[in-house]
Length: 254
Image (tube, rainbow, N blue to C red; front, side, top):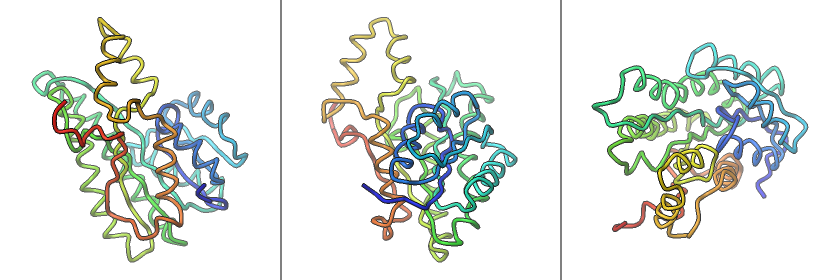
């Protein structure tokens, strides 16, 4: 197991799903974790699941400068340092581009991409004090998508470019910046999507048929990868994307 004892992390959007899985895994590895979540109630639910006693919750919209800076300030106040930033907060609207309202587009761009820039902007000076890591959560939609996900894909693709630029900027400071792109992950959001279909069982079978490993991913899968990238075994990895999708995007014919 990656040893993160003595280190402090911020995980944005950690109130559920992948973000919750990441927060739990980092805490299992010994890190103190600030759960940055716009919904304070769900953030506190996550904090209650963390095995590490050194944890805190900060309710904020990290797509705003005040929320992003406030999260960094809250981590410093709680832990006295900052070593790891996980930019996980996300929003998804599934619509054709011709049907997508500009406010929906802006919401996805703000939550998925602007928050990454803002949180990184305020965290980097403190990460640089002892060398640290930023891990951005994108999606396989940054690589291949469908018509209804064009807006979402655009926001996630932007994370890849931002990651590369930040990595080059931060390398001389000893701060590494990488992206994790999850595939189909078994979360409450996925379950709701399946259950909303006319034939939930059929849709589940169809989605599973796209998984070469025969299962959906789970939040812990992503959390373990994030912990690795945050730790000392990944000190030569920066400016890149790691896809965790069970082989889904490797398939030529679906």
